[in-house]
Length: 407
Picture (cartoon, rainbow, N blue to C red):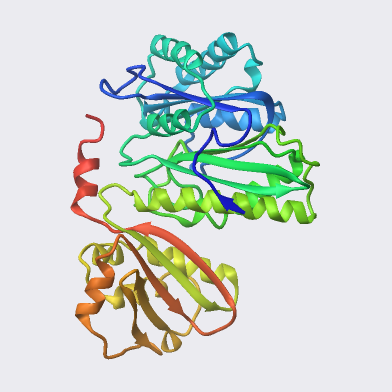
């Protein structure tokens, strides 16, 4: 597997564009389009929130229908959530307009929206935006990057990833872009992610690879404990690499799944590290577990703990908060066997051995916690299973952003 530069336009046959449609923002691009020269097989997952935005319900219907897709239209600023029949009409007319200007099947147009809940999207601006997008499509990496920036809301940076692998003598590329900064919590989190590939792959294999990988990537991140109404992850495969079709249960499938995992994990970690007001990516690793589920439950509980997140923000090695979060996670373990470590590019430091503090340097701990990426490692000494979860520190900036988000 080779890590390459790029995002949604890295794979063959995919183009992208960004446009300033003025849907909510007056000073930036706020619409993006992804277009494939060939119709794509699609797979996807959506929010677990019972309150689902109109685009989420639209995409679910498209993916479940099995119809092939050639375009994704995304807007930022307004979520088109809790908008009733008007929101559904917006989705339908968006798909119709995209189909008209691109000359494709409207039934396969996918839609994403992110932003304020409850506001209606001005359809006339969406139509004008789609016209601009279709005229600006290009397959270069710059256009993919512009699309990634156009879907941002409170994000501070765009999020892209891409890799290449060899399947049967053919180069297969997987690339993606995502947005997510606040209202992020497992199963799924508040995010939009779009992954494209030129792999020739069966629909069953595509769906299996995505659904299994979500459990260990996007469902293992948290910023603030709120699960959004708009979470959408879409994977499009147009087959233009012309490799022998990838099928479940083969070595080629395993290679594809590993590459997809890299893209998904990279995007997920970029979202966690760009949490609203965050200054650090906070990773929790649980090792020595008896089962992976036990490890995942404990790791999630650590990164979701507001007290632990605040301690990371203050560069305070308050390890008792980590043990406390593990204790209320619902997973059984023996606290008197737990070893705890902190690790970053500044080094690795043990804080706890067998449930009790060791003699460690507070100055070294502070230095480790002052880095932009910080890891807490908990060894519970029960077995060989392990899991990781990702979040961020909790700062005053989170309140500043969300106290007046609608304005």
